Amino acid sequence: MPEPMLQTIATFADELRALRRDIHRHPELAYREERTAALVAERLRGWGIEVHENVGRTGVVGVLRAGSSARSIGLRADMDALPIQEQGAISHASTHAGVMHACGHDGHTTMLLAAARYLATTRRFDGCVHLIFQPAEEGQAGARAMIEDGLFRRFPCAEVYALHNWPSLPAGTIATRPGPIMAAADRFEISVKASGGHAAQPQLTADTILCAAQIVTGANTLVARRIAPDANAVLSVTRIHGGSSHNILPAEVKLTGTVRTFDPAVQDRLEAALRDLVEGTAKAAGCTATLEYVRYYPATINDPQCAAHALEAGRALFGSALVPDAPAATSEDFAFMLREVPGAYVWLGQGSATHAAPLHDPRYDFIDEVLATGATLLAALAERILHVAAGHWLRS
Image 1 (cartoon, helix red, strand yellow):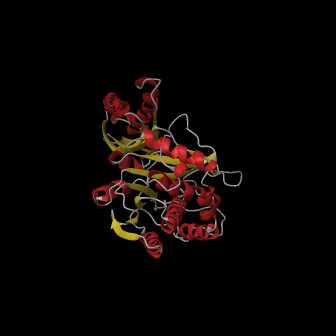
Image 2 (tube, one colour):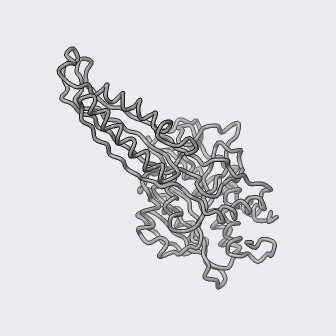
Image 3 (cartoon, one colour):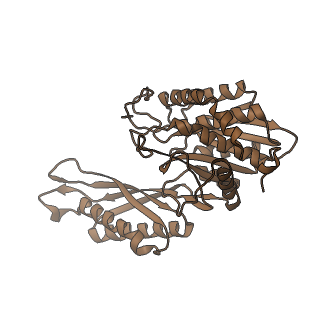
């Protein structure tokens, strides 16, 4: 077991904690990660790593070479924060009102920096490691922006890996699975319209609120009645807006929601079913309705062999790694990278009795104790895939 790697990375645990908390104090929204990107670039250069900035607007790529092989691997971390007002009573709370690292991207960035420092110091691999620090994961498709800016053309990768903290798993647990691990994310906007009128004279106008309510009720039956029982899907209406007074029937009501799926055929069927529901319900109610349906993130699909590499590395390092029974209905724009290059998305448990807040919760905070664990796994994947010298640690 390559324990010295974990021990080496653990020697700078205090520095990692300070770095992670500094990033947490200064969160930045999608495509505004200027301070974080500058910090990343500065650290990478300080360790002798070639740095490329402004990839996909605010992304950073570090290029680390050793030996003579042309083989390459990509390791990715996301940098952006969320538009949430932090509520946790912690010493390193966000200094930016309405913005916080509620998804652990501060931890992800720190872990990849720690892996970069270790790999730059030891260089126990033969080939090239591309260290990908991505902007705008939270709904703004930063991965796609980097790809469109030539990410894999400029920095070719035979395989690519990403690590995300997972509060529902015990701290330090490694988990991944072949095939789907995260869902495709779609967003829908429904507008229901009529002439509007006096609430005391409903006979003179169609009722947009009643029609919208019927659409909400019907939409929540689609997964149960239009999708096969053995298929996975989630449809949620998340926002309703309409009306301005207690005595006015509004001329327009707007609905917003999301659909999560893992199979394109199921995705197609749900979109078509929702369109039928909106059109038919509006017609029956005497209203008109439009549906805007946007497929913004595809499903995150792990390459089976790459998932196996990650599980084998986790077991060799820590004695165990889990294969979840089912994928999560949350989404991840690392999916765009996995459409271009084989790879795997890995969960790192960070649940504990003292850190129970889920992702995107205003009380959430990353657990510093797992920084060395995640950094070790990332560094080990690079060594394993690029054939570190020790024979027992060669990729099978």
